Length: 119
Length: 107
Image 1 (tube, each protein chain N blue to C red):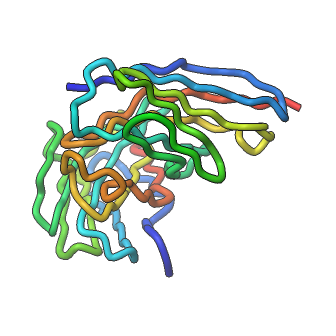
Image 2: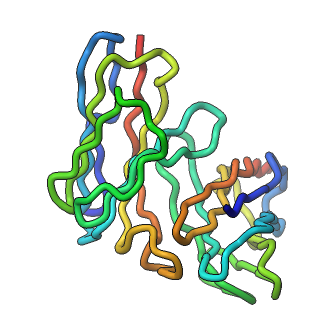
């Protein structure tokens, strides 16, 4: 399998549930990202991992908990979500992390996303 | 902190050239400008990237003036399948996506 894959593609959960989103990249990249995209809104960067270390957390609520066990896998653990958390969650990877002047080395390769609905 | 501004929407007809301009007044010296295309319920896809002057690939051209405070994505001879949202991204130490331009191509 090539590129960036995400599972599940669709997820419906109640506010008291605990679920996890999974992302896997087969590109040999060193950096991975989680984005949230709500309807008619631009992409919001949530977390950045570079060489398995979290380098960016854009004030994301603690009900979203990321995990990066290695450079190829990224998880987003979800618990006690709110209906306003319903959105498309996108994973991306790049060869380099958020490094100024990296140019093509931080070109983002996106997965297809997980459509999350919180009831 | 660089912020990008681009038109919310644009309409075009098949076969026309489409130019979408993005403003990024506070771009940093080491920042690159990247454009992505996104179809509904899919992840964005890289189109083109540049630092200055002009860059061309098989699908688009990117024009960046000397002051780098704006950039223009040029799509030659668009087709119906080019209907999508186009994002301008200033890439460097921070990732800042614009709000996207919804391009609608009509027959």
